[in-house]
Amino acid sequence: MLESVVLQGALVRLEPLGLDHVGPLVEAAQDRRSFEWTFTPDGHDEMTAYVREALDKVDAGAHVAFATLERHPKGADRVVGATRFCEIEYWQWPPGATHQRHGVPDVVDIGYTWLASAAQRTGVNTEAKLLMLAHAFEVWGVHRVGLRTDVRNMKSWAAIERIGCSLDGIMRADRPGADDTVRTSARFSMVAAQWPAAKQRLVDRLEAHRSVS
Image 1 (cartoon, rainbow, N blue to C red):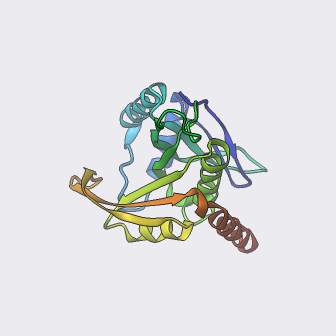
Image 2: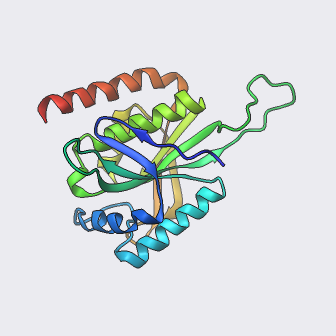
Image 3: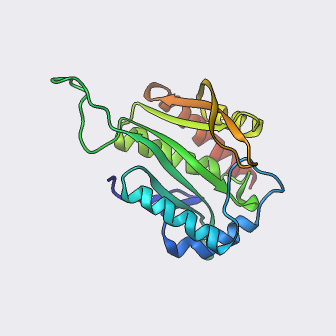
C-alpha cells in the first residue's frame, strides 16, 4: 500500500480522503452544473458509501484517494471535490532487468475527479493535476499516467489534451455511465518523456490565471 501524502500548492491542497470529509463533500456536490458526465454521490448516505468504498480500495492498495480543498489564505480552506490515483500497476520485469523497482508503481491513472461548480475554471483543477502529475513522475518515477473521459464529454477531452496528454484510443463498453448508459471512454496518457514540457505548460497556465484573478 502506498503511503498517504498531502499535496499542496498555492490554490489547492489534496489531503487523504476520510470519513470526516463526508459532510463537506455533500455540500460541495450540491454546487453542481445541471448535467455532468461523472457520477457524484447525492446526499449523506450516498456520499458515506462513496467514501467507504474509496477507503476500501485505499486499504487494498488499489487507489490513493484525496479530498480536494481550495486554499484560502485569509480563511478556512474549503472542500470542493475529490480525486484519486487509480489503476495502479507494479510491473514484474524479467530476472536481472535494470528497471525492476519495489514499493512504487510503474504506471498509474488519475480518475474519479469531480469539482463543485464554483471551483471549476478557477485554476483549482489545473494545479491539482500539476501536483498529482509531479508526484507521479518525480516522486514515484512512473513511466505513464493515464486519464479517461466519457467519449461524449468534449470539454473534458479538450482539457485533457491541453494538459499535454495524447489520445491512445477509444474503449467501447468501458464502464457504467453517469447517465445510466454503458459508457464508451476516450483513453489518454502522458509518458515520462512528455512531462517536462507539460509541466511548464501547466505552470504557465497557473501564472496566467493568477495574473487575471
